[in-house]
Length: 151
Image (cartoon, rainbow, N blue to C red):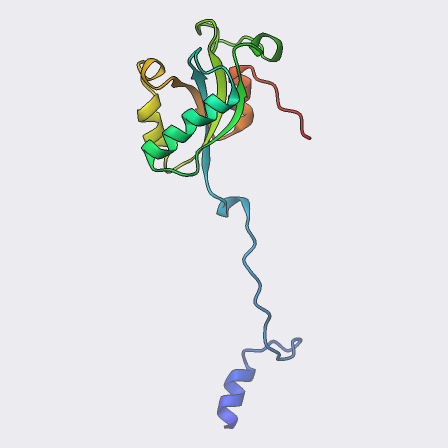
């Protein structure tokens, strides 16, 4: 019995007394969070309000099988002139097209890019990509969208 106590007591530091350790959950650091991409998209002129844009993103969710797509920003064509600045990425867009930002998990990003990345997707699906980044701030800058006000 003494040998067992000696072996066990050698594991305890001299300035600690033995007691059961509390179980502490691992802290959620930035590296442990889910990775995501922010995709700047253009909507066809027929999608002129946020509800229609969210419905289009819901259709993308079902076709990709990815429940974590989310429409973050949407600026319809009627409000674009007041809220955005013209950048090279959006200078050649047709009149009446709305802009938005979609959040997607990094694992679903290649599939989303294939689905809405080609030029015909704006005509067939009503949505097409313009730019993407790992930071939403960069996508907003490229699209010329302001940072939304916090409530």
